Image (cartoon, rainbow, N blue to C red; front, side):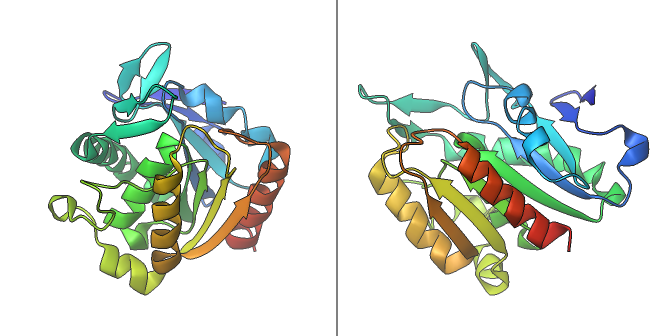
Length: 226
């Protein structure tokens, strides 16, 4: 295990550099208020033969970090954010990724909560760059109530819909952090843009459980290791 710090991002690697060449790369993007260690802890439960890079978000948000600011209502549901700051986070990730992607057979994304919003935004920007995407208890960015908003031309949704890459999305319908209307909007949009495998987990809340980890492991094995 190794940690590498760039000017903007700290990255935890599941394997030393000498063992990464030619493997699939899965980038792990944590949720709001966490750090790279949060999803790095999942790696023992994910398939071997894959290199995992857990990236720390660029903005400090005690006790952890965030990809972009979130505003919450009194019940604790996320109700607002800045799309432009989220896209800035994507640009920082692409800048880092451009320096390492040549070592790998493919690149995929796994994002939890806010990390899923970043993962799907990266996919929307460069649909051909990623083999698969995994989203856990997360959402797709919506700007001014419109999930198809142009975001200043950063998203290439037409190309995404033409390619329809495989995506796994797991969530609990009782998730009290992601508002139900946002989850419903995300679901409808994903069905039109990706080859979606959506799985619901009762009693999981806003998190990841053992059953979902097994399903994610099977999904990655099927698409990246066969």
